[in-house]
Image 1 (tube, helix red, strand yellow):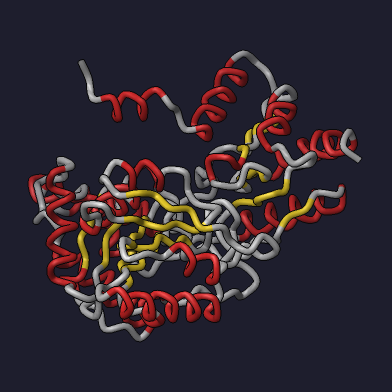
Image 2 (image 1 turned 180 degrees about the vertical axis):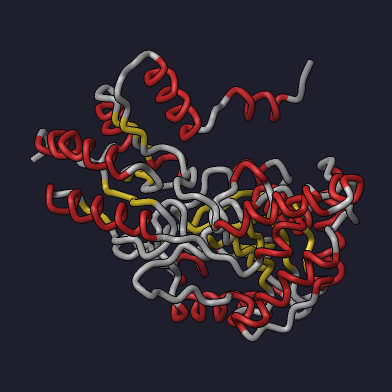
Length: 392
């Protein structure tokens, strides 16, 4: 006998990973594969990241480098991140507001479990990262999708307010967004804050905002990514350095619970407790030390920007419909014919791997990652063009 919920999760693979692994098998068989499935950074880490890895290993005592840290992380690393955000946003964060985790996923799971109470609901805006659903449902809370405005993929605050109930404990937002690449504007976030403040007062308890921000530094055309706690005080941040420092395999991120969050000490302690029952001891100590040295480092986004512009311009010229992304490294495209799974299957038959949007809450869209080689992207364009011609 095994846990039936965990069995179902283990037997239902991520559609993104399935496509990625299919592409690896086809490529190993010698076929040319055009793989737009996985959001795996394709630009190198900033040079100082690797330099600090080497310097730490060469110059620090090896026992200190590889030993346990405090469960929330070293105070040096936590304070370095706080100071960087304070300088950039004029925030008033302290190192004590941070809890380092093995990437954004454990941060999200810890916060969701910290906030989930019996009979509670957690809302997420479509399109959403597919893992939000199992993260929420495994906590015992109900997962409630909220449709976005399809013309812009901004938050539809009227639709959201209609779904907020006395059982609503939190709302998850992800900006820049995976899969749409859209950044929620300051105006949108102010409207959201007004709704959550009003409904929280009506129901007599705070409604928390969980801000999932792994793409915060991946921004184009001078777009602003507002600092969400400045707009809504009851915001808890979940962050990862996977994208901003191009090191997804190193698994380092954090939870940030600002002092202004209602019951902030309890929220922080509950997230720490959730992390504890998940088997978390401390985030990797070497990566913490690199983050402490590189908290202000930024990637060179030129390659991502070129791919974003090239693919968007080509697809829209062929007749595809897509909101131009100003963040992250994805395009979220309306599927010709309206059935993204069927369209994705047709593309797959030609070794063009695009992710159908059903698991993102939008079954008539597909996602194409732009963190790919420019050469492969250019080679794929005739396939995209031929596919849509059969629908015109």
